[in-house]
Image 1 (cartoon, rainbow, N blue to C red):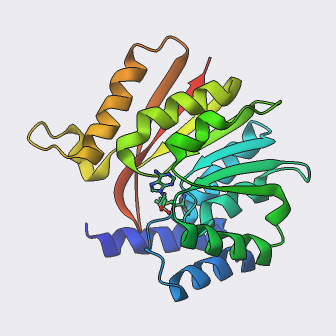
Image 2 (cartoon, rainbow, N blue to C red):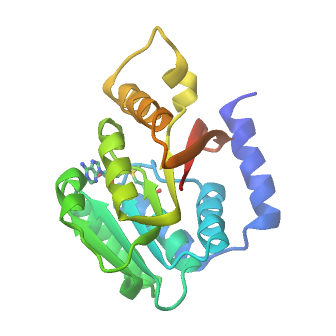
Length: 219
Ligand code: SAM
């Protein structure tokens, strides 16, 4: 099976399950026109994030790694009118494009974009209300820092989702190492002995290739 087959598979399933959405399509178009790398979640994955947020009645979402705000829009659509997303992005250019996309989607007032290195910015966050859900999708070497900070900021029963934890199976290959792979391994090792977290990895395949989400519940 080739990546084209999996892309076709996504298109097929999406044709039944994902109605056309102008805001999401406009964001993808703008991201492409402005030269952003195509490294955001797929449409099917975005919908899953949206449904997971709705399933726990999420009102407050924390996101690490905004890019052009594609996943942010999926989350924003899941939240009630008074819902809030705080999303962290190191690249000012990316943050600007995300801000345009959210504005165009009419969702800007639900979202605060924090521009800066998330490992420096997250510890400054001391909200009155905890978050319900965190989505970690930025530089992989800092996965564990982001996870620990998300856990600090999350309510009991809240959920942390981490993207790109399978990496075409490379994370599990004992002959391979690099800082991204090590960033995922360090996270798995920490969760193993974390009595406040229950988690599982679910492999994903589709137009973005083979990868996986880690889904963690804060007890
Ligand atoms: N979540 C987005 C989506 O699905 O549409 C995709 C995010 S993209 C995979 C990762 C983003 O994390 C990039 O825009 C990158 O600039 C940002 N990033 C990388 N290192 C970062 C850091 N140290 N702090 C905050 N953001 C960072």
